[in-house]
Image (cartoon, one colour):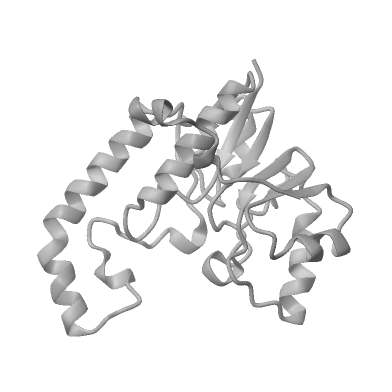
Length: 214
């Protein structure tokens, strides 16, 4: 059975996030239903490597005293949530044997016996949030031309001349692109030859009975 690595915004962040966990699980289930073995890649983008979900205040956008106090009061619940989510990612997914970052990502295909990759979903293409992360944009050599995106979102992008230059280059890494919104479809069609279409979020691919299992 072919093993496909799923790369997305999920395990690492300043706070645990229900949406990112659920979309990853839903995509994991959808890939499995197509006859592949989905592997959740334990991937930490460089931009998230200094985040501490057990003490998230230093990574918050709001750094005023009131926000600090609210974070302190919520800290026991925040920490409890972190461990619950970590258990979810461990128990409900087939997860890579080790953590991957920019420093060791070149080893992932051999270590995990991967055939290809799926990037998505969530706002992984949001350049204002993550920049042009090499994992999210399939820019590692082992990902180029063996990766598709599914329901990836650009958010509300800032398309400067420099951003467009980088974006046009990064999109060439993909075999096909599935985008979550219509917003960037015309742009992608105009600036790349990569097949692209709008797709629904993976959370909408399943019935309520599927969600009853978790």
